[in-house]
Image (cartoon, rainbow, N blue to C red; front, side):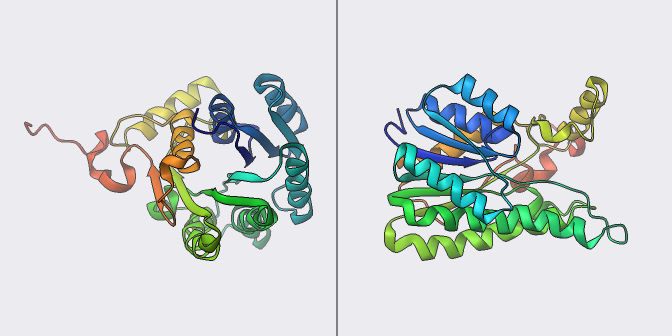
Length: 261
């Protein structure tokens, strides 16, 4: 077990990548605290994952709530070995069609919320602890309509570099994981029916070199690597888990030719 006896805090741990990571961490021997805004999904996660999971209702945009979540985690399980600052939101912010409030909301959750998650946890991080921030392939993709989201996710790499430098004297590592298109509930708003989802998935898959969208469990396994002692000499890095979009975009089915191998 790669996390046996360790304590992890996962924000946004009640669905999608966060929940998949919580599930994997528990299987690897960790005690896990998860946060989220939805009490019902938090309770369902605890019911599924068992006694080694603590669920704390907390809004990632509320520094006081984050402080309370960390305090509850430390009181229940002791000091922190892993922080997965995963909570985030996505929204379209087209130029000429976006309010200040809509733009600021994305930054408040995806940047400010992440910083204050780490700040709340910092006094309780043990030597050798690992902090992982969830960014996105959008940090470099340049997709129209996602200025706020892309900016927020790109900011996390810069923030991680600073945090890694600040926390290095305490032997705390800080890294970023950048998922590509992943099969999570985040897509339900844009594709609310099975037919719409299947159409969306086909379209997305054509733009990914590996020809498919990712699974939450695949992102979780990457987070597990960064959280574990297997990554004990890895800090300040941004690891893309995107089926090749960032590194080999033109290998996607959409761009392939019939040239012989």
